[in-house]
Length: 395
Image (cartoon, rainbow, N blue to C red; front, side, top):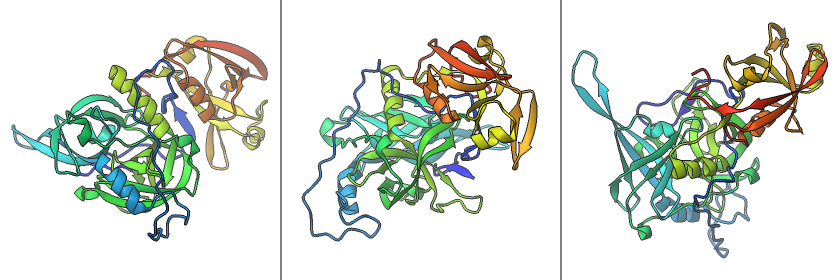
């Protein structure tokens, strides 16, 4: 079971990790060249070698020790306390429910990144700093589709320690990582581990898919939500957002997920600039086909993306894309057959659903997308005017 890391009323994320069907094409975000907001991205300074013994979980030539990463980045990690009015069963009055999460500073102007589900429906938001300062925060913007939110506090610049956002595309399996957050309300807890996998997919609070997610075995739990996952030089490579419990526990079992920093950069820039994120939307459910599955299903192409269903009224339907009308089960997997197979998008060969999603999300609403499809053994080209991603895949 995937769970958001909120302490209190924990978010239960729907969907299954690595599901075969990607709904709606609206999960992660590609950089927007029109965005002008600047987020703190200064490179971390690598210190001279010290005599401290490196922790066993880090390589001997690691740039910074865990202690040094914590010393440098810790002041930039905050505890977020939210208050929400809730109705009590059998009573007409409302009570205030408090919940805890984590976040981190990204600029000297007071912007803070956290998870959307940490501040969801919050009426008041308070940010607690490592030095003991407690200040009210205003909500700048939210993006449920990536589970990211931006807050702002009114603090002197010299009281803020921004954390640098790394290039998450460079993250590799086996890289040493550190997580800092507030699990179960235990403020400024540090844990360490490695990158267990990259290019994972998780389900966002509004049921879209978040792509390019980083998996780690660093211990993260409820209350770590919104806190940073840091590289071995103390740069943010992701925002800790969910854990996999396997249905056996509420706590960490060594499988956590962080929204990658490159996604965070783009989302945050748009939220600061306009208070919202707009994404291009195609409106299909799809399945990746391989040479083996194509042979078993007697398809006329050996790779591409099978259009399972087309959302009524979507840009895909208006452009003439067709979904399936029958189903087949091969090796325990159900396939929806009879629909178009997308093999190219804007001239780029499409071999899997992630590639098509990335092409769509590199565009803006109202942009045109040229698709090359295979329909009943014939090659056709369709031009789609992309729409705006809805609030949910079905709404």
